[in-house]
Amino acid sequence: MPLQKVKQGQFNFTPDFFTPRLSVLKIGWWITFSQNCNYIHPPENAQHQKSWLKWGGLSFDLNPFEKHENSALGGFRHNPDDQCIEVLDYWHKDGQTDNGIGRDPLDAVVFDETFPWWLEIDYGNKTVAQVFFIRGRKIVQVQQFNRLPRISWQVGAWAGGQLPATQDMDFDFTRIRRWVNGIPALV
Image (cartoon, rainbow, N blue to C red; front, side, top):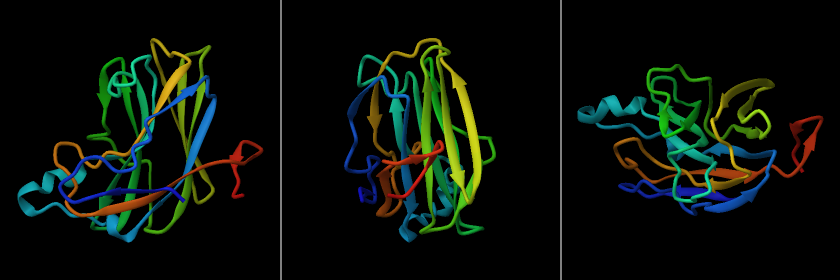
């Protein structure tokens, strides 16, 4: 299982999945957050506890270095009060970022709980759906883009908004390989 890891003081999780994808219609991953994702910002940076980290996703641009132009990423943050990981859809659309600040999380998972997350791309309508399937509940968030080329780039996780990782962290990010009636199935 591919483990995404970040060291304290760094932003980039490794390995970085800078992989081209052509005309992909559906792609997803099983995600499991380890106990060490229980980061807490020190009191002088407490406001950053509400910032969203990214577990990765796809960037839709001919230029692979334009991650912030058009992309669909999953967002997460540790909620120390409830000891859970909150999740949210995170977008870059036409160069504008919807980083989730001020929005409520879509749901939350506990440490070591595995859930599938996937993207469904409709090139004709220029839409991308982020689908979260948590404890039998399907949550779908859709955005329409002005342009949606048939090339996309898988991008890796990012451990920060403005501040780097406060501690070493890791989570499992395993590609979904089997679908049954449109829902991911374990192999």
